[in-house]
Length: 187
Image (cartoon, rainbow, N blue to C red):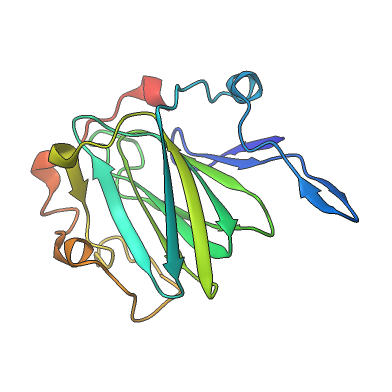
């Protein structure tokens, strides 16, 4: 397993060891001891699954105050996965990082609590699984509009398929009063 710390504190790109032969491929998608040794010792309490068609954009989501860390991977297809540092006081507040996650590369992205997360589907269909460090709390659900001009994320699908909720989120500046605080110990 290869773990790379990205330019946003606490964000990790994980590339599991792959074992391929004529039958296919095998990899461990999570192993608590190995992940802890690599710096990811969070306790996961909930797994989420989504199946989406090409052009679907889900995000940019976060929870506050019951923030969720997420370990995200594409089980089928491919997604352009984005994490945005929205933690007030973070040294890189307002920056984002994107990675391609697919059933070809088996990479995972760890999104720390307090960061916004979203993805768009770049293959005909994609299945995404993500482990969460906190339970889903509808009362704490928040978001930032996917096309915030201040973020200028170059989403590779246009126009995206969005839920009404994702269409209604405000910009990062408009949501400043409800953003999480940066805690160096989380990343």
